Length: 65
Image 1 (spheres, rainbow, N blue to C red):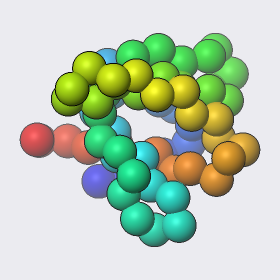
Image 2 (cartoon, one colour):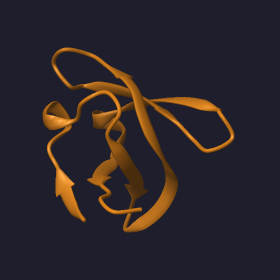
Image 3 (cartoon, helix red, strand yellow):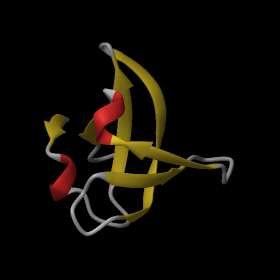
């Protein structure tokens, strides 16, 4: 896993959403804005959450899960 720049996140990427070092959500990027400032992450229950990079969240790409 590694922290990633928001603009490098693509639809269907598996991510962990962290805030202040703690994981707040895991899921799949459902959609993102072209400039990478906002992403929608869908969790395993199908709930969709809109995140904005200026709110302090980090995205960590997850591989092999």
